[in-house]
Amino acid sequence: MLKSPACPIIALEEHYWDAELAALFTGLDAGAPPALAGRLRDTGAARLADMDAAGIDIQVLSHTAPSLQKIAAADAPALARRVNDRLAAIVATQPARYAGFAALPTSDPAAAADELARCVETLGFKGAMIHGLAEGHFIDEERYWPIFARAEALDVPIYLHPAIPHPDVIEAYYKEYAKDYPVLLRAAWGYTVEAATQAIRLVLSGVFEKHTKLKFILGHLGEGLPFLLWRINNGLARPGQKPVAFRELFSRHFWITTSGFFSDPALLLCVQEMGIDRILFAVDYPFEANAPGPAWLQTVPLCDEDKAKIASGNAKRLLRM
Image (cartoon, rainbow, N blue to C red; front, side):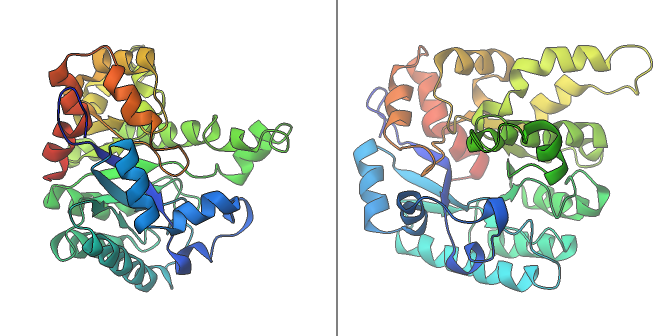
């Protein structure tokens, strides 16, 4: 609960591990430090106590990266049903404290669309989360549009979460520094570039002209894109480009969260660029500790009405909570 104003806090990008799915992760996706792995596995008393201590009323749970995006079509749909059924069972243990984002078998787009519908209509999930590239493919490709058509019809958002960059990108951009600074591939930079590129490609793909009510969420204060919107839009308006209202389309179809990004200047820029109604609270637990997020939100230089929108009001409207 936010103390001033007194309102609930809903955190939207809060991760966990499904044992069966996480056991399939390999290479850079595999493993985690023991303390972090323990927090990812826990969805019981310890997680709830940590939420209580920080003042977080609800977590919207989502599987951590890379989730199902690297699972082949032969196995992904059946695995997705098991993973999502287990998440629904977790939410059912604490329905006042937990909600869920579906994991989607993107390697089979038709099955992913059906699974999204099942998760929303039968399991009560609030949308879905997609992590990084789908078997090496950007999700703006038209093969994935059936997923987006179903999300639009269901009126639920898809959260675009980063994952480890493509191996060729790691080789070209990061190899000299990855050993000494492994987080450079992740939260420090690689994740941002990966997710921001996904969002840019979606705007350019034409999907929003076909699906005019489609909704996406980006974490980490929009992966840097709110800061860059004017420049991207201005560049794409130069002669020789196919016409696109980039800034307008992005601002109409994307919401952003505070996950892992508790900075007053960055937040205020996002408020100016996106508008207060497009900003949602998130922590990025357990990769970030719970306590600093609500403590920061309490002190940000915004009026009480705007703080309440970020804390939970905007999430209630977007996710119909």
